[in-house]
Length: 133
Image 1 (cartoon, rainbow, N blue to C red):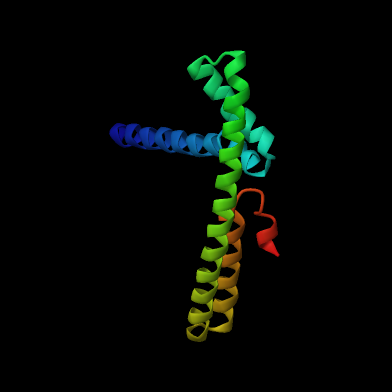
Image 2: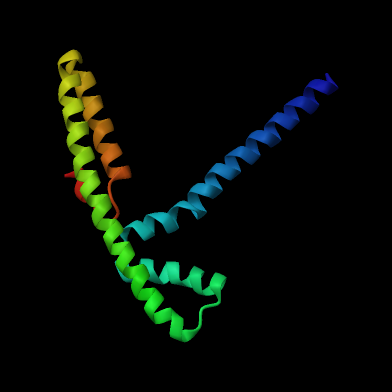
């Protein structure tokens, strides 16, 4: 019986650790990335520049031109992600339309809800709220 209690205790401790890790990751790691998706270009540039400055020990003269490069590249990538998101959205919409005839009305509603949630969660930066419409 003592062995069983020891194993049960170890399992409880393990599960508590896993739960703590999941909750901690959700609370502490996810918010910065969510905010970064919604912040303006300058804030994203500042975030990237802080790391570049720290890691590369950039001088004051280097920060200005490198900051402009980072800002330009960020804006170009954001445009590219938006373009591809629009193309992807069309593909997924066609997929939905092809699946619906094979589903019941309740299944169609659930599929639509799943699709909307995916668009909300994985939409392009700064556009996630618009995807709910």
